[in-house]
Image 1 (tube, rainbow, N blue to C red):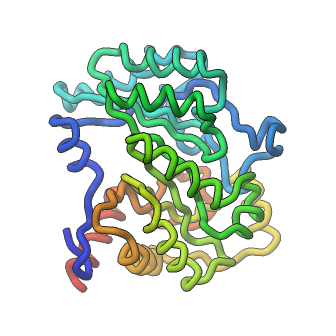
Image 2: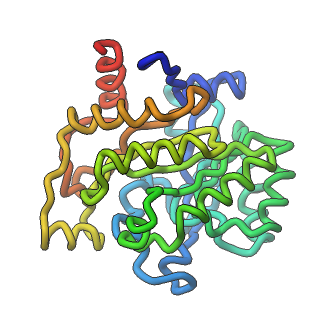
Image 3: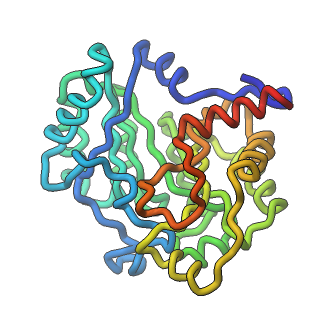
Length: 297
């Protein structure tokens, strides 16, 4: 698909091309915490974060990695019996632990039948050299993506949302990881009310200079139980409509390289958690609207 002369690479087809078969990610919760919650870096976590919003029902840390993956497989196999899977270590910071423990978790996931690789979500300040060395070896024998939460390239924004690391830290570790031959993914949040459109386009230029394989764009969501929700209750701001956000996304991606795989444009949290924006759109419905707008331009 093309937008203003730029090729948009969709994640699903790209993944199938990489692995030669249809592949589905299965989230697992390995019981991690976060250095921004346990006092190592800070307390309370990021102001926007409530991990309950993206954990499937089967994804419980009291269950083994194997059991979580097998239950996830059962959910998808009814519709796609020949499907292969990626174990997605998603909740909290999935490189935050002793190397031997991390190795046991990752290797257990890879022993599950039909699991053909790993996606590991983490923070840029939680990639020690010994772990990166192990992941480099792991990448030689299985499919691997390391996903880093960047969230913003604006240093003031990162302080304001209590992120606990800088954009410079993100840029450095992304370059280090990519230099090891590992596929690198990143998350960015669009819609912080104090970031202007011009600031976001400058950010897109910064992201474009990083050696990323995949990128997820998320709208800013005001989620119940977060510090951001308390801030919004005290001083509400105007949130964009779906149409306004689509226009922002379309302009943002024109600044990105054609080789970048765009995994998603929005995040979909359970409706009971979402204060704003309430668009009533599933991820695929939003993506279809983006594609339609591209065709109309």
